[in-house]
Length: 406
Image (cartoon, rainbow, N blue to C red; front, side, top):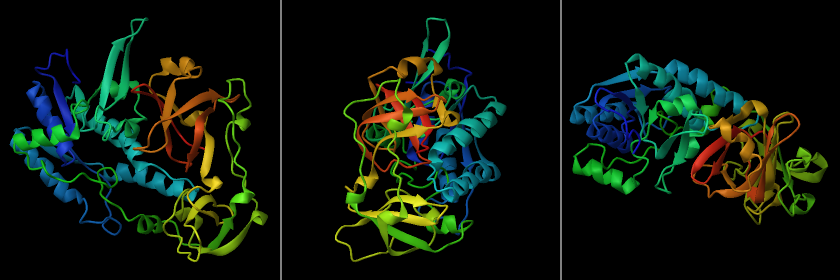
């Protein structure tokens, strides 16, 4: 497990305790390994008007985390990140939706809160490391230049691997991080919790936003994004031609040939209804259209914030939902290990994900003349959504990530 080879006596680890079973067992394992452990619960932004309180209220979670800390005999405290969370996560989410993109708050929370603000607070408390209950692993080795490099590796439980959510971590954050349950199966974590009698042993996993709870998205967005009626335009499948490529492009290609851009003209479709605001919808969305009378279900295939129009098509196999590639702007490209950049641009052995729990698929990456990163898929992929993150893997190692531009 993480931390092997360290002199653990006197080594302080501050654990981010969420009130769930994973972080509870992570704290227990660190104690068993001989670390000096401190529990810290993060209170983040919370708004009862949009949070479904019976799902994951922060008060109940903080109480559970405190009870586990008492059972383990470790110091515990609550720290309030509400103001910073609103600024770094919530305001960012509003801005992204307003621009017609769909953000991933969990990836942002890990980058901005858990492994930035939380890490800094832990260091103030004398921590040598921070630890979380993520199902990921950390690798460490000395390269040919004598420099220590840190790897972000998939968790060994394929059903719980959370490396995608940590795709924006950098070397300095990994250096200071431990992931005690990364080599365990979820069932093993539950069993450990039951064996030592933790109050969180049978607690359900949280499905909501990072350390907040389950949020009602329509009410959340309407806090700052006012409803604005617009047209729903249906695009027939024969009016869209999906560009298909016989092979993965070479690094000398014109990047415009790599990204399938769905350029829709108003004359291509017909109005079939109205919506409450294009910023409320995302590519691939099915629910919330409230338009009946179609042979197949309607899906959003594109939105136009400028014109306040959403374009839809019938059937989940509509060609407007399928993409051959995507673009990541240079400013949003993130190499977990920068030393792998050159080799990765030439590699034929990469896979990627554009959603959590998605089955990885083969891809190739190149850079255009402006150093933007172009990912080209071996097969068409559905619902490539601007604002979400692409995570790139070589074997079990996550090596690159970036915000999807187109």
